[in-house]
Length: 212
Image (cartoon, rainbow, N blue to C red; front, top):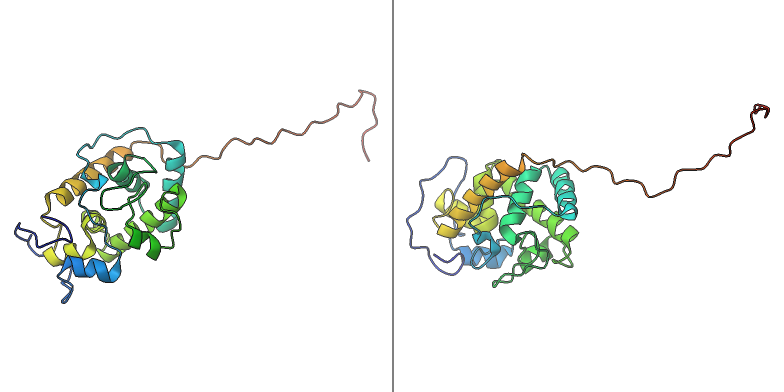
């Protein structure tokens, strides 16, 4: 099934309590066009199938941890999303136009105030912001929030759970598995070593009078 480009052929999942249907927004393509905030999953790096964590560039780790703290999101979840979306490539651009580390669609980036989606700081801040919105919308359910990040919140509400799109289901599984692995890594931001030289003190002669 193509996300936002037609009706999925797979049957819907059972409805889930706490996730109401939204009449009038059953057509995901219409919802995407209206809101410009859903990220199309077709052809993005979200189709990654590996759940093995990779070496995280220090600059990305720092930005991810800072944004996670700012928006109240698990930093391990943020890093797993970045890995599955772009493989930590800040210049990644999908065939559908999603850009940067967290694969922001142009309308999403614009709505979140991003001027340069390929700038790691802007991309991560906006991506984590959007992810936090999905976590709030789906009452902290990580699987539903990830499905919304990948296929759009309208699809999640429409099916009452993770949409039956094979790519979205793989994406959710992979990110959740990666989150568990990243939790084993040190994800705190340590202060950088100061580059300011230590002040030099003049050694006084042994018979020098003490200052008054």
